[in-house]
Image (cartoon, rainbow, N blue to C red; front, side, top):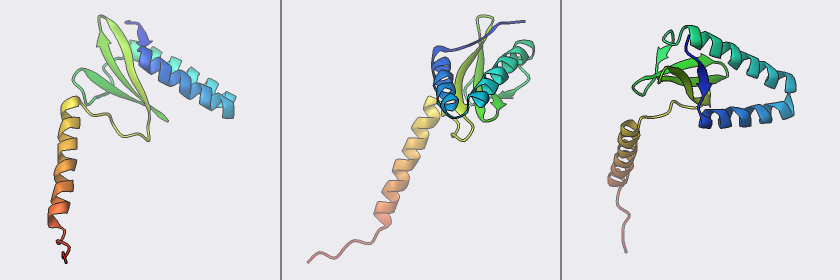
Length: 120
C-alpha cells in the first residue's frame, strides 16, 4: 500500500482551517483531523476509487465539508490540495485563460450593446 502525505500547501491550508475551527469548537477540529487520518488510510488502500479531477492525473475526494485533490507521484499518494466544499473547482491554466477571455468578451459585448449617450 502506497504511503499518503499532504503537500506543503495542503498541509498549511489544513492547519490554518483546524486552528480556526479549534477556536470555535475544539471537538469539531479533532473530529476533522481524525476523519482526514481515516481518509488517508482509505486512499492508501484504494487510491483510484475516487472521481477523476479536472487536471490530468488528479482525482477528487469528497470529505464534507472539504474536497481533497489527490495525485500519485513516485509511488506516493499526495493530497495536493484541500478546499472547502463551498468553493468552486479550481481551473486548469488553459481553462482559466479561456474563462477570463470569455468574461472579457462578455463585458465588451455589454459595452457595445449599450445605447450611446447623447452628446451636447
